[in-house]
Image 1 (tube, one colour):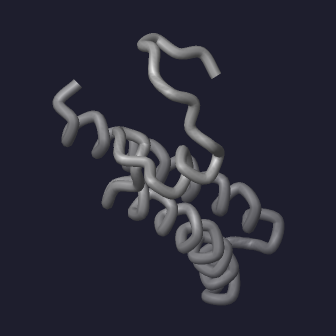
Image 2: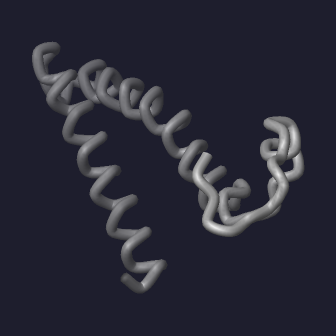
Length: 86
């Protein structure tokens, strides 16, 4: 690992276990992971539910899932952009 300042070399355990820097997990990190874990199965279920409800045919399930996924990513990135003020 390249170092910018001289300091003693830490073991792998010390670098991982006792990390206290900006790479620590944050609430935003946990929320983004939760979004990924929950959204994909939810969108698959929503796409099939729309087919079962008679809103569209069987061949439209994959495009509907893709549309839901792309729309949710656009909303998530827009929200992150707006909240960070960049």
